Length: 297
Length: 258
Ligand SMILES: Nc1ncnc2c1ncn2[C@@H]1O[C@H](COP(=O)(O)OP(=O)(O)O)[C@@H](O)[C@H]1O
Ligand SMILES: [Mg+2]
Image (cartoon, rainbow over all chains, first blue to last red; front, side):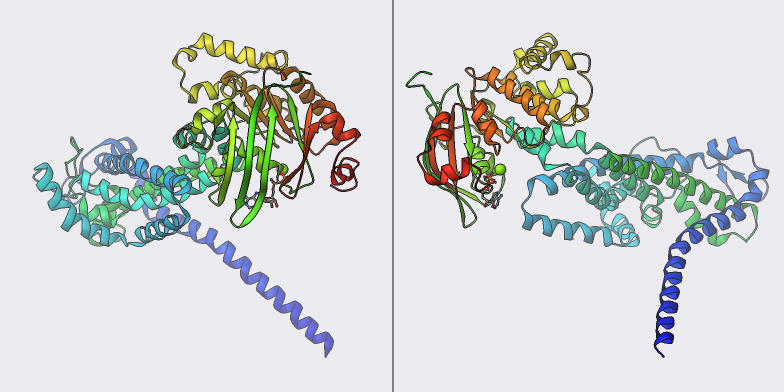
């Protein structure tokens, strides 16, 4: 009786261990599974196209009966420009907020602000899209007298708001990780708070802050619904901040439902997915390596 | 030793509380100019706290209240008109653990000049000269003259601590506060820092907290003995170690408690 109970315990221990192991492995399995699926759907077309034309042509006419063209150049420019502009807005705000949270505000205000920022992160992207359409767009038309309110700037503004929470929370962690002895050394030499920030903290935390920005980039470049709704969805290379654009993600979301499975158009859309996969993978990997760089020190 | 040296730091009825805990109790002391004054006493008696009053760096923590008066070179440092920046420029501090900033040796030494923005001192040549002078003063020039651009945090601990002293010097401080500056160093490093302190006497008023009685005897001119937030005794070092006035002091310096 005793023995069997012992055995039972040993067995259940093993079982639990197995379950936990499966959970851990499943994450890897899923990622590879998704990659494999996307690759399988898109790969046949890789053999058929001229890669240079695919990447650099701005002719995206997939539904033409006689001469369909599949150039994603304009879409890449759209994705990159909206992301870069979003970061130009989000980085100063995000890093500024992180500095304020970690160095300047009291514990009470800090709690309040952090909760608010987390709320900002929890807003679904389709709601951001709504805001872009119904609030930002008329505002842009009114303030800047532009003909179309759904455009590059509108999308970038939304993406900025969506990536600020990430930049703030990772950036604050990076600043918190700077040893207090550095601050004390600078203060004892007569540095003002602001001098401590830009002469000591920013250099000491620059890797962590860079990682924060890269994770923000990853968030912005992969975002779909908000940019689909707020950027105007028109294929062209933008010449001003207020030109409508179209992104890689929005193209997939908008067109995949209308293609027949296995058609060229369908395969190209998966190829775009693969391209996005590659971009976010590189961005995340860089962020990861940068963060590891900090830990090693 | 002159009989009536000028006074560098003077406190009158200094009290300090961390929240409701009183860490300093009515401290009145006069610290002579150009000498090395030791601050000894068992752990937790308030040595660090007292030292950190002299450059008001205690106030970094929100829960500190102070009452009483501290004058440094005749100026009450709690006067509303006193600039903390100027105070800290003339009262430098060396910490228990060497804490060079994670930048180059060179930048560590010119850090003070840069933040105090003395325009005329910011030319390349002037900075180079300040670095060389400061490093020579702490006997590091020969060791480091070819490594001015290595990260200061990569140096040996002893070199780091000397560098922390060197970076105070370009600001021409009146007072240098040292909180157990040798506790992280080995015997050789301790010896080197002690030599350095002796070389710096005369120009600077040095106040040093130490746990090491032998060190207090070797390097200080005067000693203050603290116990539970109170100053029990303050006299020339020789007197304190040979015939202390207070029985508690005698017990402590003979090593009966620590
Ligand atoms: N930041 C602080 N907050 C609260 N209490 C403190 C703080 N710093 C020191 N104390 C307390 O004040 C007393 C004196 O500390 P300290 O000056 O560091 O002693 P010493 O340097 O002589 O060992 C100790 O009892 C310590 O616990
Ligand atoms: Mg101490």
